[in-house]
Image (cartoon, rainbow, N blue to C red; front, side, top):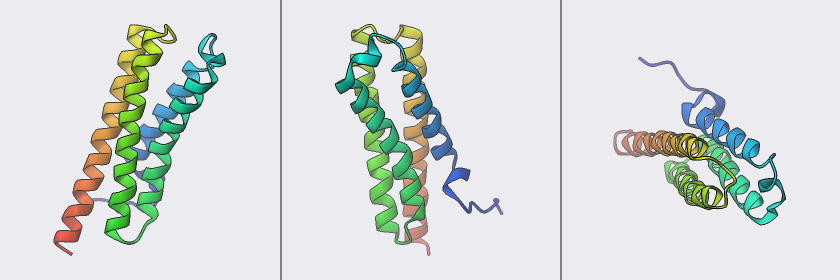
Length: 126
């Protein structure tokens, strides 16, 4: 039997989302991105939303609530992905940085989808 996960910090999805947040913050430490307050705030909020909704979903007891928060986390990944193109087009990140960001977003999204599938399976087979 697999090791029991007792906290959201143990979830690979949460750890990957945390990496995503770190990456986003690092991009907005540089000018001119640092002074594009609207974009900076929106991208940072979306990345943070992915990470915190994974945590909140994990802490929920009822499967439907878990799935709701995991779905929000997955949608926030989509928001970061979309906004990454604005960052690229504005010249705030390089093509290589964009590729790295897309990989982090995709990995986080896949892991959150796994949490959704796992929750759904446990609900179907209690």
